[in-house]
Length: 113
Image (cartoon, rainbow, N blue to C red):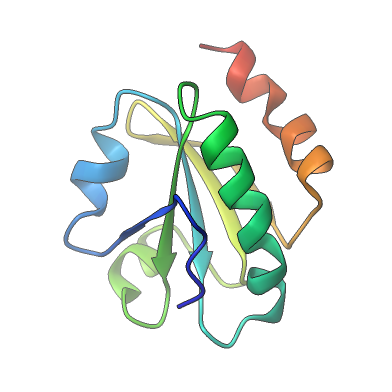
């Protein structure tokens, strides 16, 4: 899996505890080793994880090794970014994007805290 620095990996087994029970909103990147756009997104997620750690938790889930969660949320394309708050998905985005655009798309998530 393409590991973004500072971004934890979650699995089917740890997802509910790490994501659904988290105190902060959680951005989950559904990713895979073979996904080129996922590699482009890794440094963007690393930077946001460092800069906004007090407002947002970022984790990655490898879809090839964790089919349960992937199926539960109907994820079909990589990368899919899904934001969870209080155990519920509140936002979903598909595809890589530059840091500035991703932060703009997350503004409503930050504003709702």
